Amino acid sequence: AQSVTQPDIHITVSEGASLELRCNYSYGATPYLFWYVQSPGQGLQLLLKYFSGDTLVQGIKGFEAEFKRSQSSFNLRKPSVHWSDAAEYFCAVGGRASSASKIIFGSGTRLSIRP
Amino acid sequence: GAVVSQHPSRVICKSGTSVKIECRSLDFQATTMFWYRQFPKQSLMLMATSNEGSKATYEQGVEKDKFLINHASLTLSTLTVTSAHPEDSSFYICSAEGQSTFTAEAFFGQGTRLTVV
Image (tube, rainbow over all chains, first blue to last red; front, side, top):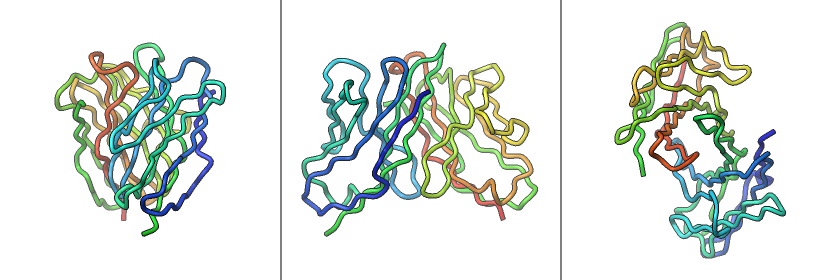
């Protein structure tokens, strides 16, 4: 069965510090992997996605993620966080089933930034 | 990227009434639309998948008679919460996918905050 696990419910980092948000997935085929960010009361914004090719993908706002098949992981990283990065982050896995894809979300990690 | 517009962004309704939420793809034809529900501080749970011109496919545990989904055109899907109750209060988000968009990538609306009083 498809599933996404984000083991960290809440993370607090200091502004300027590096960040890594963990994501593990379970999927029967080659997964399509996503990271989304959600500010309070807002919709979702796609940070980055992995379909194939280079396992290190670059996204918007200075984020990157690395796909590691052997570990079934797709961790999100940023070398130096900004106060504006405080938000909820969702890892998601999707794929094609017939003519449509279905995206399954992890439980989310709330990121707080310490001044 | 493609733009998906959701309306309204916020709605308050009385218990027992029905509420319609619209999801529009503005610059592409959405062959498939997805509806999600998000409870406070929780993740998004897929409610249903709708394909243009056909009946929606509901996830297990979602009442199809309560959450009516219509996908009558390639740019519009609607979710109607019928006989709403306070426990239906939630954040509802749609996403849309078109044949011309990236494989397996769906674009999300900005969400609708429903409060039933």
